[in-house]
Length: 134
Image 1: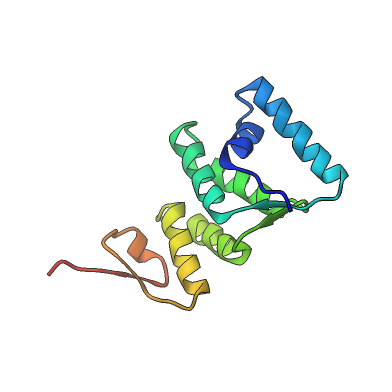
Image 2: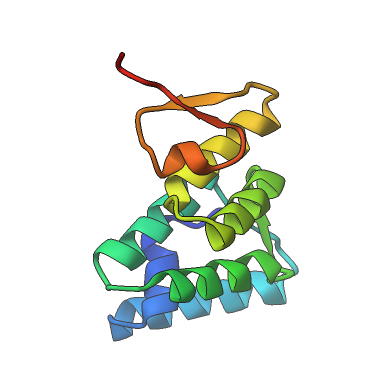
């Protein structure tokens, strides 16, 4: 099963480079036509969210829309898909950033909780505990 890197997904979503967008579209169209499932590692999703927000100014609602759309695409398969879905829901409902929500969801999937954090916003996510310094 072929996999996609973050930069291919960024070009596909943001459409800021015509040549790379065309190449990404050709690749994805070919894979879909060949009935290939496209694998996306969890680290690619994490980096994609960060790039969209930090480099392209996407707000939370835009990020939620993009990730939801990718997760619902029949031709894509995601590493730790259930944890990604949980992380997306936690992100949608809370104040913590997507990365913290994903950390919590992956820890829960592994049966390893709580996730201890010095981050007060992250500590509000169910399954996380705030680590006090005193």
